[in-house]
Length: 142
Image 1 (cartoon, one colour):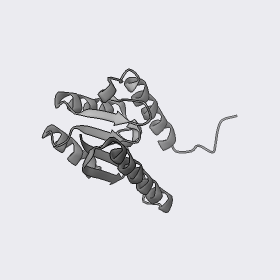
Image 2 (cartoon, rainbow, N blue to C red; image 1 turned 180 degrees about the horizontal axis):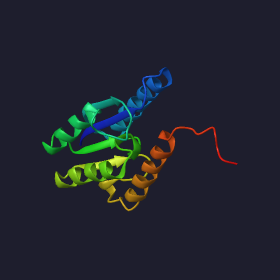
Image 3 (cartoon, rainbow, N blue to C red; image 1 turned 90 degrees about the horizontal axis):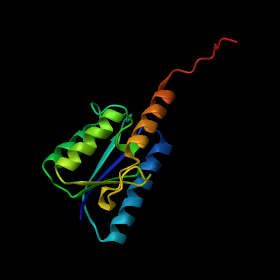
């Protein structure tokens, strides 16, 4: 099985760079264990709320439409998208081109026909993104 692996962090801080390395190591180990082949790592260092600035996510979508791989792997659905609309767009593109998606937060594993929690995870990640991006208000009304 030919794998497209999407990894993302939100910033270029040192601790985030370690996360990128850990994600890559995780997927190398997984592919070795399963006997799967790497097509390409798609790596972005950008917020997950939009796809406009994430050039490698856009490239992954383009390559999915060209059916260059069999499965998209991502640590979590939130690495692919942190808004519901984009989550569903990626899922629909994959389904249309008969590409599986597996995330390791249990949001989706289409290889095992497991996607019943997808909508809930997409919603939760969008809510979390909205909550964490709101400016902290120090002057609360008492």
